[in-house]
Length: 392
Image (cartoon, rainbow, N blue to C red; front, side):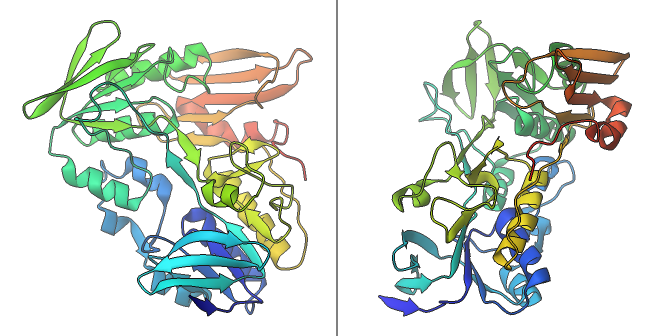
């Protein structure tokens, strides 16, 4: 086993938005310290949020790529190790074990950052062993999914959360007949008050999507060149392709095997530091004091704070209210949910598609909001009235 020494450097595991954003922010502050990104894929730079509205824009996986790994490395003055898996962390020796086509080797670090992301939650129902149900969580996933779609395919989409409704709207705009199924009584069931969930369901329906909420798929069966999904109310839905968007599970195995503290994600403190003072985590794999934050704006804030810490200025993560823009052209939606467990009620105002809902505590404090239609333009003003998600 070879030893590739990098004793004074920073090593980031993962080349997604978290890994590359951190590298970019760090290089603004420190042009000298060696920095290496290790990734199991090809290290291409792309915007992951674009995946859920790429079909309607007729974008291929190749056109979504902003630059390849070598260009990114040259631009930032870093090293990017592509097609290289990290098989273990040796914390006592401050090394990681790698496996690539070069064989097994080790890489030393001064500071290690886990930006390992998350994996789609697996979907299973009777029949899914014979009828594939795809997931799209990265560029390679999108490439495979797009290559299998034919014009006008009937698509069964399981999961009407944030990513599910975005994919549903995008596929409908791309000319596909979409059936969206979710056990919650409405789309975005965890984020929207009932009235606005119904408004979104109606808008998606007007966009040509068959929205089936409050029900589950009980069985899938292959029938010749297509398949049939049986719903728990007895309905049978014909489809050609199936896609699951039922949530993500943080990739924590590497951290867990290294003895780091893991809950739903890799537990970090205000400095994004794990239970090992020389190892940090950010992005979809990290669990902050505000919980799991699988959104872009928190990721960017984490990267900026951690970059300063790695550059020698300890900087606690501060998260103001960060509204999430839902990419559903059928009905523009902005969500700034209250913290889990908050007490209060939704107060909804407005007419037609232009609605404003504010989650208000018993003492009158505003804790969260949802904006739809033209009211979505008010998101920055509304965000200033909300409490911080995480104080520094």
